[in-house]
Image (cartoon, rainbow, N blue to C red; front, side, top):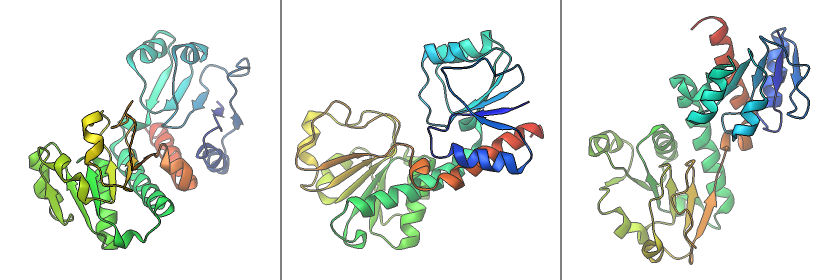
Amino acid sequence: MKFFLDTTDRRLPYVKVQLKKLGYKVEDFDFFDLDYICAGDYIIFSPAFKWTIELAKKIPTNTHVVCGNVDSEVLNIFQNNFIDYLNLMSSEEFVLKNAILTSEGALADMIFYSSKSIFEERTLILGGGRVAKAMACLLHKLGLDFDITMRNPDKLLEAELVAKKCITWESFKDKLCNYDIVINTIPQKLFDENDVEKFKINSSVFELASKQCLEGIKTKDFSYILCPALPSKYTPESAGKLIVDEIIKKFKGE
């Protein structure tokens, strides 16, 4: 058994180092030459890898694939070719720890793109999922001025423990003019052309979700900053360790 890694993602070289330390045989992976990959081998991709049907069809049969979420068509190809699929995003432990690394990366981007101290800026977090919670906990620990909004009113009570104020989902758009920074964690288009004027002039919207909240909309007088794969960008070694931990758990049958 060997491990083959797609090292185009900055996390994977650290996965390679850690697996070698554990005594495994590890090589780099290349879609252009797959003859050396045998049944039982593992092929490892980042959680953010973008699959296509064509790429999925190239994976040799009876192998193991480690990656993030895939759509139904890619999943069918894996199943038809007897490919064992380890979905990193199905592990609650992985998702929670990855959310923490994502929040750290988002903070780094907030500091990088701001012309002021983040302690002088007012922030709004959109969402109530794991990344939003991790973001809220981090900003709370730093003592930053931030509010939060989410669709589920039941989660607002929990959010009130850390946020300065919880904004109702029905009213948050009318309050966008109050915020220097907006952090979106909801993977859905949330705004239309009529909402553009509601953002504060010279404010920044940081997109942490996989689907853009301002998809297809031209921004005006504010910055829209896409923040994909933040653990890979800022904490690749720690993020790589999370991937290795999931693989080891699989070996142990956990």
